Image 1 (cartoon, helix red, strand yellow):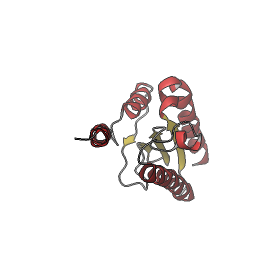
Image 2: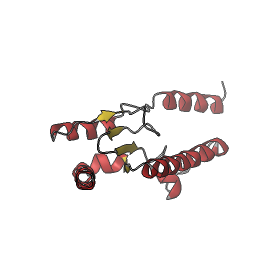
Image 3: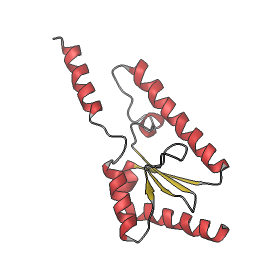
Length: 143
């Protein structure tokens, strides 16, 4: 097996282990919300974009995004994949566009859309919680 084939197998194995739901950052944010007494739905399939966390009655959709998959690194030119760029760059760019489309569609329906980067949740969970609480208060006063 060539070196390139081994690299591809390793990358494929690594990528196959990446989860799309029940990620550590989602769980961390959900546990913190639960401890504060907030009740929510998780992985809301009936809502466009399938928010990671949602407050249906308040129309608040929360997404927990990794910097790589949702394009923060690409946009900041911090990390651009060195191999197979013709695959990865368009894939990540499409994820960025999809995130924008989801936000626009939900906001048109009266939803507040909150997006948190993985590092925000890991390093400043309290600020994330405060932003969610502010949104909950805002929706309470506008209803």
